[in-house]
Length: 69
Image 1 (tube, rainbow, N blue to C red):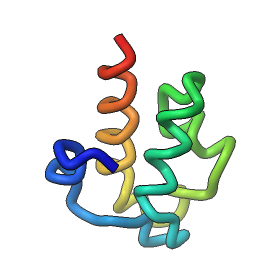
Image 2: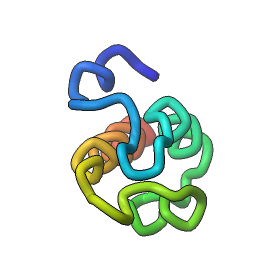
Image 3: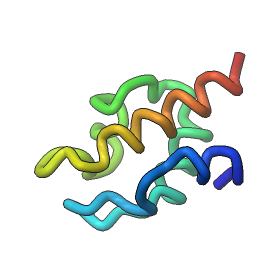
Image 4: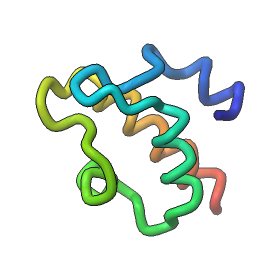
């Protein structure tokens, strides 16, 4: 995970499914089709139950989509 991104995040993993943000970063970085949390949920369980990690997941998606352009 990039240091600049790590500084923007509150946590380090999805609290409802224990998926690390490093795993999420790897998937989002490699799967260009992931543009929303709903797209991300097609590939891994996260942000479905408690939604506490949703803001961090959105930051990850925004970060990697911004760097693609």
